[in-house]
Image (cartoon, rainbow, N blue to C red; front, side, top):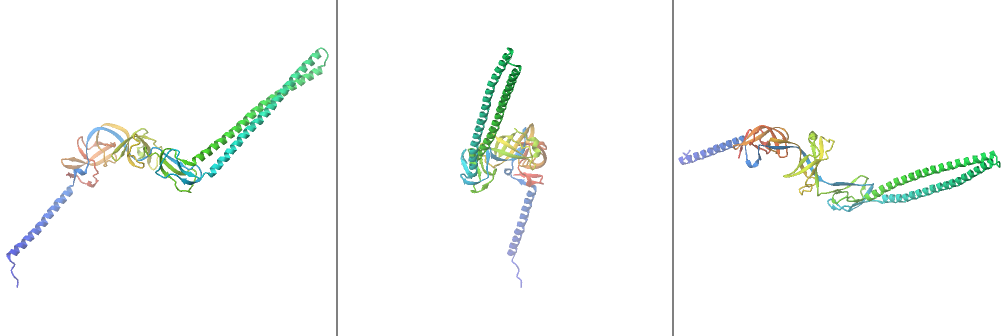
Length: 414
C-alpha cells in the first residue's frame, strides 16, 4: 500500500528541480553571449601594431632578397693532374699569406722542370755557337775583301803604267786594253764580295733573331713550368680563414679542380636577387638598405649581372660598414634598393601586410573599434607605403597581419 510523500520532501525535490533548470538556463545565456562576442570579434591592443597616416618624403624602393658573403674570397684550384699527399690545415683554420695548406705530388712536374732547365742551357750554347760561326764567316769574307781591294789597287797601277808606256811608244794598245779589262773585272769582283758580306750579315742577324726568339719562347715555357711547380705547392694567397679544403689524402685531382677556398671573414658584402620585372628600376650606384632583423646598414649597388637566370637578376651591394660585428657569412637579409623620391606623399608605416601596389582590406582603429576598409596603396620604401586613396591624415591603421579576421567588418579593441 503506497504511503503519502511528506510535504517537506516534496518541497525539497521541487527546489532541486528549480536549481537544476535554472543552472541550465544561465549556462545557455552565457554561451549565447560568448557566441555573440565571437561573431562580433575582438582583439587585444597589445597583440597588434598600429600606424598613423601622415604626409612626408617617400624614398621609393624595390625589395630584393640577399645573402651575406665574404668581401674577399679566393678559390684555389689544382694547377696540375696530381694527387693529395699531405693536408696541413682544416676548414675553419686561420691562415697567413704564403702559409702551406696542402701538398700535391710533384715528382713529374719537378722532373719536367729540370729537363727544361738543361734544354735551356743547350739552346743558349747553340745560340752562342751559331753566333761565333757566323762572325767567323763574315770575318773571313772581310779579309778576302781587303785582299781584293789590294789587288784592285795593283791593277789600277798596272793600267796607268801601260797607258804611260803606250803614250811613249813602249807598249801596245792590246796590253792597255788587257790591263783595263783586268782592272774592271777585279772591281766587279770586289763589289760582288761586298754585296755577299752585306747579305751574310743580314742572314746572320735573321738567324740570330730566330734562335733568340726560339730561346725566348722556350724561356716562357720554362717560366710556366716554374709557375706550375710553385702553384702546386698549395699556399694561402692572403691572410684569411680557410672555409673549405679537400682533406682526402691520396685523392686524385685534375687540373682546374677546386681544392680549397680562403675567405676574409672580417669584411662582407651582400649578393642579392630580384625579379627581372624590376630590372629598369635597378642601376649601379643606387643606394641600398640592408635589413637584418632590426639592424639597418647602408650600401651601394654594384655588379649587376646583364643576364637573366630563371627570371631573376643578381647584383651585389657593397656595404659602408663591411666589418659590422652582426654580419655573418650566409646570413639572409632583406635588401631595399632606392630608385626615386616622392615629396609630400600620403603614407603609412610599412609592415607585413604590404606585398606590392594594389587594393587592400585594412583595419582602421577608431573609438575602441577596428573597421575594415578598402584602401589603394602605391609605391613603398623600407619604412613607408604610399596611400593613393581610402585614408586620411591622422587616421590610425593596423599594420599587423590580420588575415585571420578576413570576412569580418568590425572588431572590438580590448
